[in-house]
Amino acid sequence: MAMPFSRESWIWYICAIGIIIARLIARRILFRSLKGLQLDDWTMGLFVLTSYTALMVVSNRWFKAGSNLESPDFNFGTLNDDQLSRRTYGSKMMIVTEQMQISVIWSCKACLLIMYYRLTRTALRNENIAIKLLSAYVALGYVTMQILYFAVWCRPFSEYYAVPTNSVQCNTLVDHRITKAVFNISSDLIMLSIALQMLIRSTLPWRRKLVLCGIFSLGIFVIAAAALNSYYSFAHPYDDMWMFWYVRESSMAIIVANIPFTWTIIRELFEVGDFDESVQPWTFHPHARTTSVATHTTHQTVSSGQRARTRESPINSHGSRGTQSITLVGSMSPGKENGESPAKSLALDDIDRNLEIQAVRSHDFASVPSRSNQTEGRILRQSVETSSQ
Image 1 (cartoon, rainbow, N blue to C red):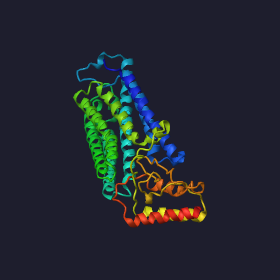
Image 2 (image 1 turned 90 degrees about the horizontal axis):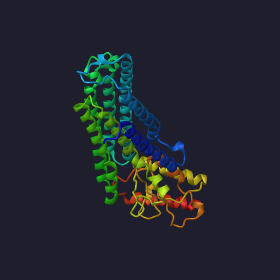
Image 3 (image 1 turned 45 degrees about the horizontal axis):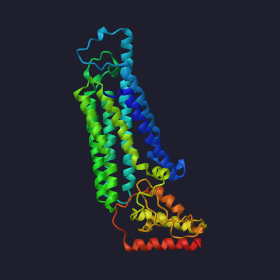
Image 4 (image 1 turned 90 degrees about the vertical axis):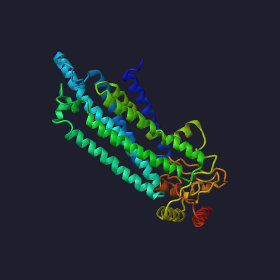
């Protein structure tokens, strides 16, 4: 027996909200302050959370009240004034449900695109350009879909909640959902293909590649949910099964968009090691602009006599346990076995914080650093250690 909509929807809600909260806690642990949260964190924690909550509330109200979504042979004349009023209210809730579902899906896309942009902006020029083009395509899809929904498909707009309505486009939303499905599924497929080929072509060890590919491949479930959502919307528009898939797709999108950011809190709660602890850490080789920022910050740290925490500079990332590893979510593996003195316990802290904001934990998708870059990194490190002594 199928689970009632109200029960299933609130189970999904608990799971999705839990993963959002886990993401925000993990980012708070990472940045040590709420001020360190970035644009995608605030978008997820405020806008997506609000839209998703509204989606759950209004969809359940629609389910109870009913709407003008009935087959053409349905006789609305049999309904009394109270029933007609309830269905008018339910039809208005249906409009809100549609807009909240769109807001959740496209906001999750935006958060993922922001993350991909940060990963590619300093090491992968071609992929970075592809992410920018995909972002423009996603934005174009959203604007086009909304213009058509509010100004084209159903005129006048009040017919969306008229009982009965004068057009099947006003209650089944067939043309609108075709447009949404095209932009939604195509952008998800492009995003997934960019992420997977980026990981496969990276210099990461194969074990980490497989794990990360598995994480990002969870987007397949979102695409499958969107496809099933479209199928039931087109094949059975007067049934209520499409609403189940509205909730499932939205919930899966939130879960997939937040899973990559939860490792920090898992590590803190269960005291597990870093994801890359047993193998050579991921390295990040920024271009000249980021290198110059690190160099400038190093001189400022040395001249001001600030203490620095024991941690390898991202410019000089080797394979030892004492090397900082920059992961997908910015989790770092500070060296604890190098025996540095307490006077250097905060070494390069300011550099790390600057690079956290500017490089934003990019992976090593670039080629192996040249010998000159490694030499430069060792010189910078030695100069800080000498100053600290």
